[in-house]
Length: 109
Image (cartoon, rainbow, N blue to C red):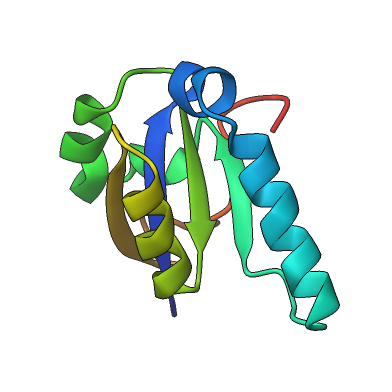
């Protein structure tokens, strides 16, 4: 199993009120310059929130939600420090309750 770390927020906040697209674009450019494999993903309406152990996390976040998921804990910590009004956490997958860590409940992810 792999440990995934996440930053979770409402879609309105993260995608409309914050200049977040620029942050992801800059991070992607940095990874390309360093020939580093992308280890973060933006997921609208993340399915991992449907796992029973994460029900309390889902209840704390305005819906619809969006998550940045990464295997890089330092990146998620950096995002948390840069952004306000976000939740952070971690989970392991694949598992019985989270078979696909990058799955979305949205038809357009």
